[in-house]
Image 1 (spheres, one colour):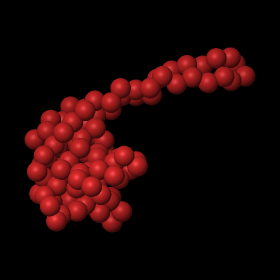
Image 2 (cartoon, rainbow, N blue to C red):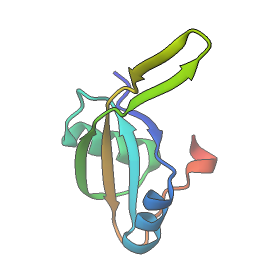
Image 3 (cartoon, helix red, strand yellow):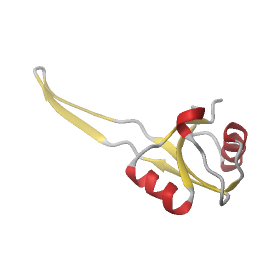
Image 4 (tube, rainbow, N blue to C red):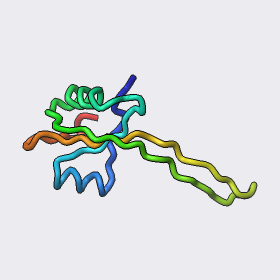
Length: 96
């Protein structure tokens, strides 16, 4: 099971990184906080202070096409907010 799928690089996540030394990741929905902590420490070589998780609900999507009205949903996913020890950073662009 691949625990960490990819980092979340949004404006909100970037502001968390700058102000509070927190990083956001999309993770496997079956992973618990201990598994996420171990995976981040092993992959990036940092000390994890705290892990917060949330299941993000999928959004309803719809569009008008030549065939008519099409509707569906984007998939739900699990998000992990990782707090790293002061003075340590994670560089996404050189490690992933």
